[in-house]
Amino acid sequence: MRTTISWWRALRAVVGRPIEVGAIVPSWWPLGVRLHDVTIGEDAAFGTEPFLRAEGVVMGVRPWPLIHGRIEAAGVTLDRPRLSLVRDRSARWNVESLGLAADDGGNGKSKSKESRLRRTGPARVGGRARAHGDARR
Image (cartoon, rainbow, N blue to C red):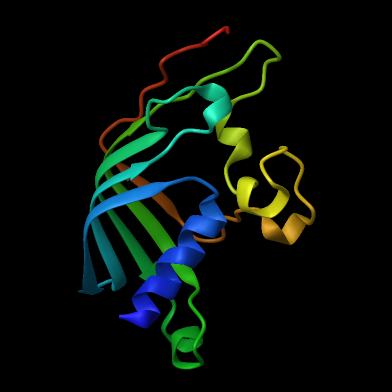
């Protein structure tokens, strides 16, 4: 249980936003985890509606680093995502702050390039992502 809590805290720290999940289930193919009923919260500067909702998320992990006690994502697949893209008056998008809050106290400036979210594997989306347009506040 302690490993699950550590992993969960690490994931929230990387994303820098609140995350809610209905269930976490191990996946043997692909090797990794399946998350059901996933919600990622919005940056408070852009509103209160969730940034992302998905019926499911599958995160595959690379086996060799796992043997050595490290978790490296091989890929992430979203099932039926609903993504809310919002732009503020200064033309800044809500997606730009992903991965920054845990690193910089939420001021939008990352201390290091390595601390930001990086995508190195394939990104697959099942369903459609919808943009709700600009929210000029």
